[in-house]
Length: 240
Ligand SMILES: [Zn+2]
Image (cartoon, rainbow, N blue to C red; front, side, top):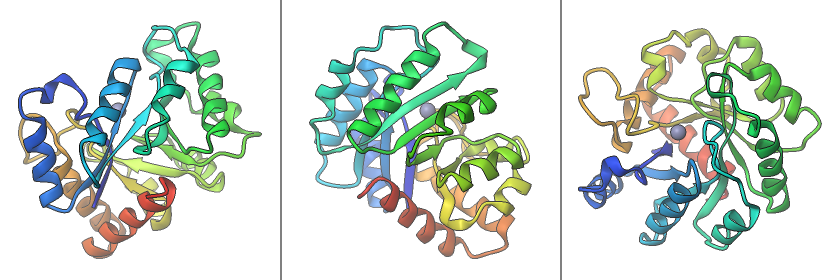
């Protein structure tokens, strides 16, 4: 299995990060730790560098942050072979600020320049995001997808993947999940957030199994089919 969106780089795991990672790898769950600004991006890379396999990193400046975006800092991190994507980047209407759009554009350019896929964060801004990527030839995933069926269709037609996490237990995304082909689906935890029901406290990568199980249930197919397809999707998208 593959948790395509984890934040073990966050301080929530400072006390037991290694144990959480070991537990995941022992259960056969690989992961990508996602940067949200320069410091967490650096930490994601440092963590990934400690493991021969199964732990990867993504670097980028999340749209809610107002810190300055400097290409050279992120380019430096891209020298690591463990960086498999640029993200999470995108648009967030709830925390809008004047640099969101320029930073998104510059990071999309960085991804293209380095031929890397993109991990999008998009809150209440699908129309705006679609306008930005319309003319671009990009690879990537819209993580934590909560948009409409129409939005889903747009991204799928664009060749992007949709990432589903514990939100599917709170908001019904069944119709979207049913219509999304299995070869366009990624599963993720977004840990430490969004702990699935029946699990308690801080979320962690092994719980990605719950997401796969729920997707299987909605689609009426076997869990193993979902686990293997989504893992293969992750490997394809992130060239692992
Ligand atoms: Zn995230």
